[in-house]
Picture 1 (cartoon, rainbow, N blue to C red):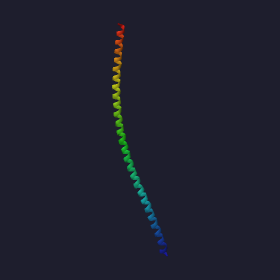
Picture 2 (picture 1 turned 180 degrees about the horizontal axis):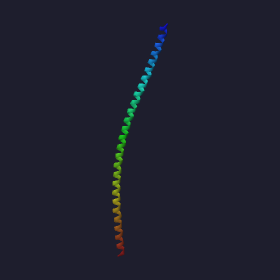
Picture 3 (picture 1 turned 30 degrees about the vertical axis):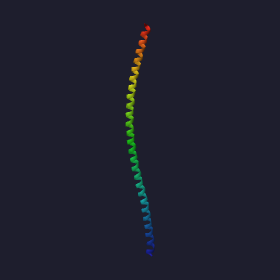
Picture 4 (picture 1 turned 180 degrees about the vertical axis):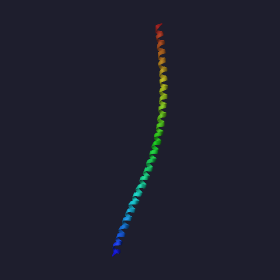
Length: 97
């Protein structure tokens, strides 16, 4: 009599253990997948950070080149303005004579 009650209880226990093991495996698989995705995300973030750093360096170089070009353009404009003043003074002297 005890055996008849004990065997179904053992079967239920084994079934519960098997089910919890399967659930545990699924959870472990999900955990491994999440860890893999997190590692990929870290790699993507590192690559994005490196790309952003390179972009910032390129932007700094471009800004310095633009500033140098502006300085050259300003110097050219000053030269042009000075030449214009000289020509106007020369024309004014010629008209006075």
